[in-house]
Length: 370
Image (cartoon, rainbow, N blue to C red; front, side, top):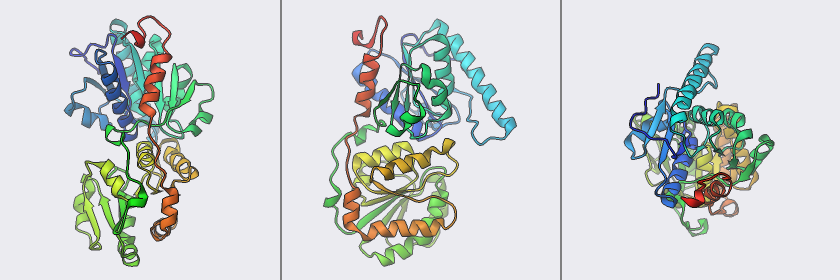
């Protein structure tokens, strides 16, 4: 299940997490920072073959181990049982390897891809930390948090769900391209841009609704345009549908930091990484939580964003298309309201996490001596 002949885990820092970008990209951000800070420390990823990490890590320079595991949320009873069996098998495999090649520490960033490594670390008493990006912690984080050396929270509200853990608010690590200053929203001028992030696997409902209301919005607000990331899978279908002349579609945006900075308003799902990046850039958003997200975490993320006075939330369901239209229209029409919601916030999550990693160790060979 997990042959690792080419890997040496002894004294390595293991990053584990994935399934979705919201779990995987914070792990990448932490790995990049750790490698820069401690270049002599090996960094190895452990994740799932079926997750986003299974597509990205094989094309990267990061040493990695991909396990044959899958999530069990929303599965049939039979498939959920099979998922648990695979998880236990991967945990046994890692325990066998790590008894002879003990990692220095493990950092889990959530998702089912983090389960085997965190539970193996727990069983072998390997120091481990958890970063929980979401306002509603996932099952793996909840099960492993109590014995973690530290739990770094992306949203302060998650502290109420993990009361028995050593929780520290750190924020959610963002990609290196977001670790800079961004131009204020007050410097944007017509044509104002609505940036639509419809590229995730669960964003078809957003894409369909936006195509239905986009032309009406742009006719009503002639000083606006729409830039719509559709995702590679949706691009072929959507590019053939009729749309307004000021409604452009692209399959993927490589420089997301630049795209957000150019936008006056963003329409997106409520993944933790996206919410964190929006905070850094300081742009208002209409967030549409993924209805079937594990533990309804996207709804909790969106509610936290709204409660901080940064945007609006629209839920899928009855009158979804109409409610999305009203929310977008409200913000497109009100320049002052957009400025009130536009509050850039410097992201110090990586620095806070690495500081805690450094100070929480209480055994010989701690990071201070690396």
